Amino acid sequence: MVGFKPADMPPTAAVKFIGAGTAACIADLFTFPLDTAKVRLQIQGEGKGMAACSHGTAVRYRGVFGTITTMVRTEGARSLYNGLVAGLQRQMSFASVRIGLYDSVKSFYTKGSEHVGIGSRLLAGCTTGAMAVALAQPTDVVKVRFQAQASSSGPNRRYQGTMQAYKAIAKEEGMRGLWRGTGPNIARNAIVNCTELVTYDLIKDCLLRNTPLTDDLPCHFTSAFGAGFCTTVIASPVDVVKTRYMNSSLGQYSSALNCALTMATKEGPIAFYKGFMPSFLRLGSWNVVMFVTYEQLKRAMMAARQI
Image 1 (cartoon, rainbow, N blue to C red):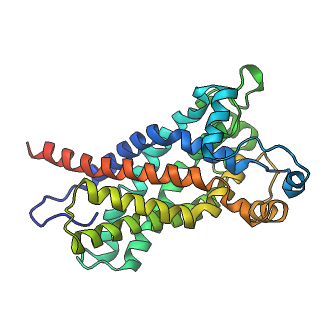
Image 2 (tube, one colour; image 1 turned 180 degrees about the vertical axis):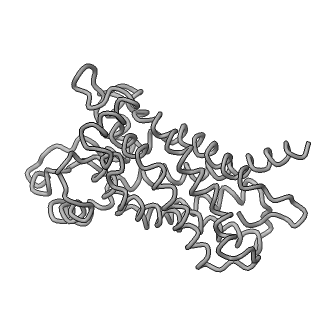
Image 3 (cartoon, rainbow, N blue to C red; image 1 turned 120 degrees about the horizontal axis):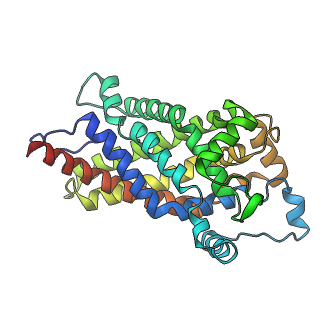
């Protein structure tokens, strides 16, 4: 990222790649319950439509903390971490590419120039986001399926374990099932990557240039939290469609566009912002933990190389 002093030795691509994946896993461990609550809220009401709501059908989950409380009461605390193994697999492959390679791809587009325009930042964000989705999509599908299923023992569970889930999806839906929702996920991550990384980059650059803040914890915290809010506002509609489509059974929706149109018709435009608060709380806190940890890991790994 920007902001290193000329005397600093810039971290290598390998350091950024490993550091990003590790930091993302640490962030996921802290914020995974919020992500699970977001998924439950996003799929709630699917197939029932607005008519059901108007007839007084009970809504199972209400708000982020209500969702977490309901899940703990009815399914146990472990349910908040359904899909964690797939989630960590996803971050090691996904964040390593989309965040760890961002600076390298940005330098490639600018041919090493120190003057980086907004266009080059956006293009780099789109590129690494698309590369990450192409690599990590199966882990995302399994993670969402686990988070969406209510915890129950015995044969009623849709999937019994992470590896069994990969095998079951491939067997029942074909290899294409493991890449279900790749289109909306690429769209989502192009938006997320551009907004999150570019906003973080710009806020951090602005703080370093125009305030007394240095390239340290307060600057990283402020930049990460601001990037999390901007990303949630812009990416939430695509995120809801992605979650619904990846969790859908075979033949439920003919395409991601059909999923979006069905949502708009049956539940109205507000459906595209279901789970907004847990999404913001999760992404904001995830960004803070991830970027602060990432910046510190980069420094620690580079210091270790110089010993």
